[in-house]
Length: 122
Image (cartoon, rainbow, N blue to C red):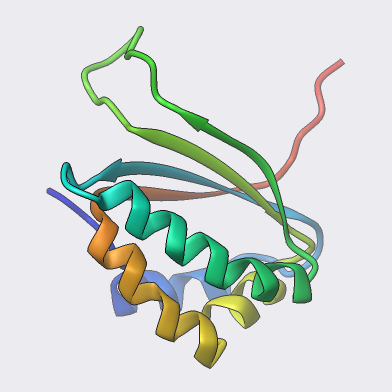
């Protein structure tokens, strides 16, 4: 089922995530065929100052090439680091951010957003 925005329950559930330590949000994106990526780029440009204001940063943005394992194909993958859960919540509740989300919605036909904590191997 295509998903673009979080449900009220999903938004409420993030408050249960511990606020100590960094989070890396893994964004899986599928764009609308006609101009979807351009709309998403507009959203990205508008929210970037808000992201940096809360201490967040883009770690990686890459376009999909192929699916090697599994059936799902995503047009892009975006990894965004936040210093804490509260920093992420501060960003996504900012009025300017909320205004910019219309371009995200106009650009995507499907998405996933995974909340992760960095874990270093080695």
